[in-house]
Structures are given as C-alpha cells and as structure tokens.
Length: 269
Ligand code: SAM
Image 1 (cartoon, protein in one colour):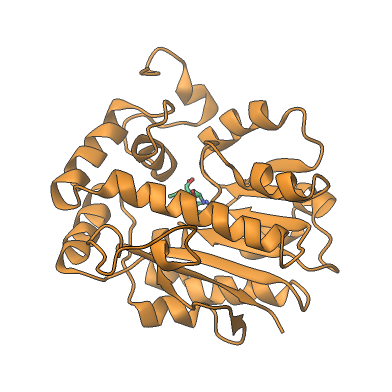
Image 2 (cartoon, helix red, strand yellow):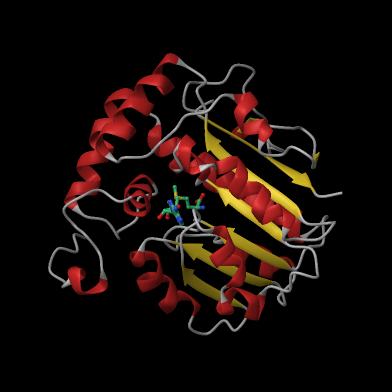
C-alpha cells in the first residue's frame, strides 16, 4: 500500500528522493516505501533482474549468522548497525529464539526505521532502536541508549550487514570497523555482508546506485576481507552469501545475483 497520504516531512522523511532503507524494503516486498523508491528499484532490475533474490540471500545469511552467534558462539549482546526497517526474522527475534535474555541495539540513520521500529519493539525491554550515523562510530559507542543495553566489558556481536557498501571510500569504512572492534573485548564477533564487484553487471549496478541513490560501492573480495584484519575469520571465510554455512544444497555454479554480495564472520582473539 502506498504511504503518500501521511505527513512524513514532519518526521524528517524525504519522499522526493529514494532512501537506502526504503529501497531495501521494496526488494524485500515490504510496504514502507514510496513511488520514488520503487522507481529506483525498477532501474536496478534492468541491470540485476535478480535483485529481489539478492535481498533474500542477505536476509537468509543474516538469519544463519545470528543463529550461529547466539547459539554456538554464545553471544548475548548484538549491536546491529544499519539495521533497516523491521521485516521478518529480525536480529532480536532470531537471537531471542535461542536465548530470550539476549540484548539487541539497532542503529540506523534513516528516521523511518525509528518510526516503524518503535512499534515493533514497544513490548521488548531487551531491544532498542537508536537513530545515529555509522560515520560517527564514537557517538554510537557513547550513546546512552546503546550503553543501557550493551555492556562493552562483555563480548558483543557487531553486525555490519548490508551497510558498509553505503559508505564512500573517503568516509573510511575500514577505520570505522576498527573503531568499533577496538571498543569490544576478546570473544566479540564481527559480521559483515557487502556488495561485491564480482561481475560486469555488478560494475554497471555500482554506477547506477551511485548516480540514483548516491551510495553503493561494490568492493572486491580482497577489500571486503580486509575488514576482518586482525580477527580470526571463521570458516568458510568471505564468500558469496549463499555459500556461508548454507542450510541446504547449493548449486555448483552461482548466478550473478548469488555472487552479488559477499560476507563472513570473524572472532576477536
Ligand atoms: N542490516 C539490514 C539487513 O541486512 O537486512 C538492513 C540493510 S539496508 C540495505 C542498509 C541500512 O543501512 C539502511 O536501513 C540504511 O538506512 C542504513 N544506513 C545507511 N547508511 C547509514 C549510516 N551512515 N549510518 C547508519 N545507518 C545507515
């Protein structure tokens, strides 16, 4: 259902330009998006017809990763940066299904995430949504609401799932990752997924993202692997998302869409 009837401007929501969170909502078949976001996705579909599947691969690996982090790795605190609009199987739902006491701080800079997240989380004391910008990691680490739930003396799952590619090179994504991982103790984990320059189509898509959305850097597998520098990369390493600890069989040869995003998880020694 279109949402143009409401006074979004009063919430700081600009409906004249596509937003990252709302465009992602389009490809997840959500309802919290506007004509301008759907128009952007229509342009991307012309280059990557599988873009809706790519979003699904990212949500699926998010679920598998959080299940591992809350389960085998035993983490009870999650800092989910660039958390996006609430959808199905959100981080707190997956983690709290394993351990109900798990605390989750969601951070996003799009005000629409707070507007919709508050309703979802109203009855969950162990979860919060904070509006803040990843480009200022020190402010996130000092945020009172984040610190209310996250004890930086205990291991933390730092999630940068589908967000680092929205930072430009000159915004220092590597420094931001290091700042966050320096602030958490041994036993903490880093979970990253990112657009990858894995095909000619990916290179074309990067051009379109940058022109129409303003962000969207498709980095090489080596650049994505570098985010995990100094950490113990877990098996199977940094791989196309469908290959990260799949629940079922995976085809021998991956499509352009299946290779469009890479990711991995590492442990801080
Ligand atoms: N992590 C979720 C997932 O993977 O399903 C959502 C990913 S969505 C593609 C990226 C999110 O990052 C959007 O909600 C967007 O608003 C947010 N984002 C982009 N740049 C950001 C920044 N500089 N600071 C905080 N959030 C940002």
